[in-house]
Image (cartoon, rainbow, N blue to C red; front, side, top):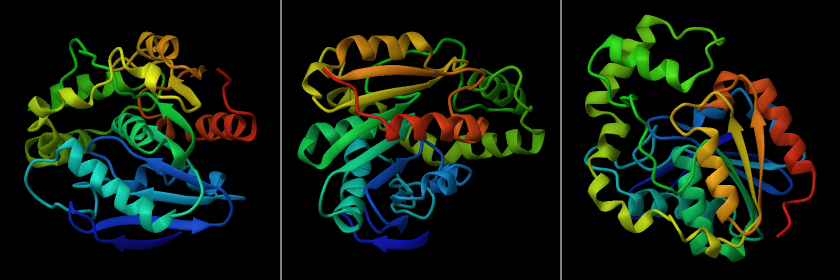
Length: 260
């Protein structure tokens, strides 16, 4: 993959692009960056063109400071796809926040979307009880991280938790949280019937932030959707269980999309 940059209303955007064939777009979650997909990208590249952005305000993409709003994220994504995949339809795989953005972008541009794969994320409201995503100390970070992962997975080291605490103060997740009062127009509770593109829901069964019940609600409301579970995986399966995730995603993409 080669790193590229493109201008956007949100500032200069950074993304990776490579391969040949149908375009597969990979969107990371809040507070993460394109490298979230580094363990699975090699398995997904054969026969495809991969486009993997740093979402606006994340990684090397601007804006580098200030609040990050949903319109800013969508503007950055549109600029990347206008440059990297200007013709034909794309398949978008989004994790967490990336899944929400995938739905919003597909709703605005249905003619450009072949299908969606939503990974532990979506456009519905959900209050996760007992999970602090902006921890103030190592203990809070440990409690949050362990609810995002399967109990049998390797424990996250303390030095990583300390960095989570540092990022919580001023990082992309905090900057995104600063615009939470402006997000209501971008939630799709009761409106998923208007998202008439094929949707696969690929879900870590151990996710306690957005549990399987969240995915079941989306499946019941979407016109063309099906659900596949990933046992012993949590909220970010492309990092926690990359081999199982890549295999499951490859199987979905090799087969026909969900029917109405």
